[in-house]
Picture 1 (tube, rainbow, N blue to C red):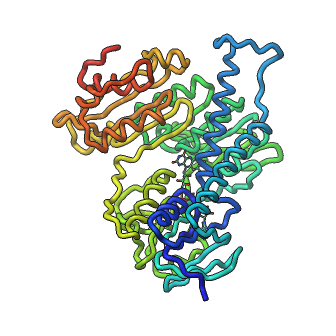
Picture 2 (cartoon, protein in one colour):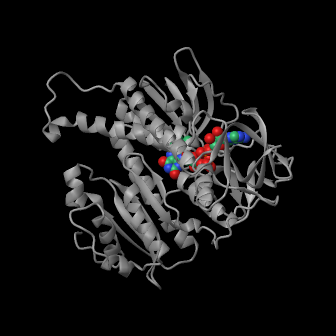
Picture 3 (cartoon, helix red, strand yellow):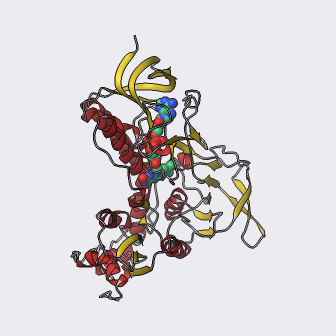
Length: 471
Ligand SMILES: Cc1cc2nc3c(=O)[nH]c(=O)nc-3n(C[C@H](O)[C@H](O)[C@H](O)COP(=O)(O)OP(=O)(O)OC[C@H]3O[C@@H](n4cnc5c(N)ncnc54)[C@H](O)[C@@H]3O)c2cc1C
């Protein structure tokens, strides 16, 4: 007899494990099939957590290197990064968090089936590798996530030509690193390894870094990276990459039509992520797909009854779907609540924060200025630089700004874009303001504590009305 559950979740990333916990909280009998040795998926094991841990090390190293400025005497020689300790601390953080999810599974009486699952129809999930068995489910949630996207013609050998999965595990700082792609993953590794001492070159096909961000943010990041010694080649296409005994040779076609040859110790390919559906047999079951992604409606229903899908693996009809941990978790909660019969409303993807933890950090929500203009809004913009703030000066982090994009007619906040210290935290206020449909005037009237970084948000709102106090 197959083991019977109310809900079987395939994949224990931030989409799957959160869906499982919420389902269990709502009284469902739940099993999660996960093929990796630990729970938490890309975010905990390969993504958000390890990269942000490395970024904290990079920040600590920066502060120590600027010790003179801080009045801290280092008596013996120059500070150096010890990658063994960096990796050990990062692994400890990851291990603690993944074990935390195991604890939450036990607390919520969720069965973790260790293995690889495929769909076999009629509410059955076949675990064909690992703890082999067949599970019976009233509802199935697919949360199989994503993996690094490979570029045709560029062979990832995991030695010289690597992906983010390899870049989080380096035990030596490469002397030189070329990074292909300047999305969140690319610029975060640029910040990490530049701070650790590598020569870093970023190659971006599109005309600017972090191309989905507001243009002013891209320009500020490129300026800051230049100051830090990170070379940015935008509008440039990698045409060839060859691993050699000592490194890698990269050929790139630059925006002025010339071919540039770069030699580096490593090439990091950071050109996005593809959905993971191999072996799942979703198509065989009749699940509609879209360019390899599982197609769902606004309630995360696939085309097959009683099979839902969330997270990096999905495409939602007519929407651009961000591959972010907090998005997958929000979707997981929503599906669990829908399956439990709760009244749920579709997520508003315009109110999802995007955070990039490079140095300086980026936080954004809503429309960029260009998008707002393209949609025909009568746009008003206000910006305020962090450098004016006392708090930013104390921290020695004076780069960047907060920019608010608003509509003149109703004083509506259309988007908020920030680059600079604590932007990934400060963006939460903007998300809440937009969710509550707060006007610029209401943001102005919101009292921001002094001295804080958040004063930049209040001042940017003042700036929209042409009345920033400290400018
Ligand atoms: C380097 C990097 C940094 C990132 N940083 C951030 C960040 O700072 N903030 C942020 O919001 N997002 C970040 N992300 C993105 C984030 O990690 C993903 O959006 C998130 O993990 C998606 O969650 P998911 O549950 O959809 O899938 P995943 O986390 O990919 O989980 C899917 C799980 O399913 C399992 N699985 C797959 N197929 C099967 C099968 N057939 N049977 C059993 N198990 C299966 C996999 O082993 C995996 O554990 C980062 C990603 C990377 C790569």
